Length: 466
Ligand code: GLY
Image (cartoon, rainbow, N blue to C red; front, side, top):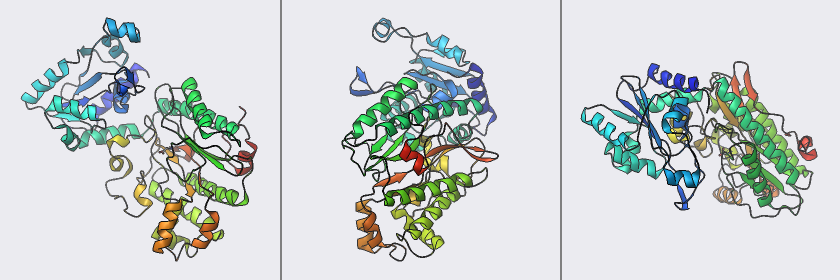
């Protein structure tokens, strides 16, 4: 856990914020979730907002904050003898709650009674949208709202307050993210060492998981580790690497307090890029460099995304894959054939930070609407940046056979795309380069240690021995 005073301060900030004006804030903790039978659960992952305000990292504890009295209370049960025999000792809830500065605790069953009393007294209950079925069913039981409607009744002011708090990272949080990114860099060095002809993607993916477990709290998401890097979230590790392939690894580790890291690197399996691979790699790197340079407080991330699109398009035009005016091509969305996703997302306790609260609420300002244009429609973060935000910057360039075929057949954007030239690059797969960037008053600061990124350094696997 972080320090007791941190959790107290965070809950005090709720009381001082533009939060719901009265009633009870209900923060459900997560429960253990069965993988294939109850005694074989998925690794436990606490709800991130519950972690943020209460810090308790075990299943089946819920929190309540009374907006009128300012009191916080935790509901949970102490382990019984069976729990202790199978899972070991655990401190009583009262003791764990005290570490988060919460003085009042009660058995978990008391939560429904206390909420029923509050509802009867006409007090509003404010909750966040559920993202697990189990949470929706618990909310139904606790509030009487049908499970499949609970998300519709989630409290907008509560969501806004949480987003406001969690978006700006404190020094303590940045230290945690740095730790996560350091472990993430270890994963990538290990992947670079293992990217060799005859080895399998699975060998690399297995190593990532082992290192993340042994140096932190495991992975922050299921990695992409594939020579088919054009499949954006490729979780299939079934291929054997060959000379000439590019291995794309998009992976992240978590810090002791569950903060995420998220980095992508691409390495030539045989040690050297081909000419085509190298020029495309340089194009993506130029786009990423320009985007990181554009990061600054007050700059809408949508503009940073578009800057990356323009730089990538410029390079694709120099290579003959695209033609015409860069501005017009990007405005039309033609570049999205090669770069069909958004430039990045917020990162913190979640790798896509707070995405469970709604992408628009986290990533878009009130006066911004999400574009429906292909490519831009997946931009998760568009709002003006603020000092203390941590974001990923991850442009890519992909040759996705089905997408190319579809667009070519439709003649889509054929004023900007030379499909004959594109055909010559098919098979390159996908290239993405990603770093985690802290927004400071001076601009974007890449977090974590140096990790090979320039093409020569990637070919040399420079620094991957450490
Ligand atoms: N790097 C994983 C993701 O952004 O989804």
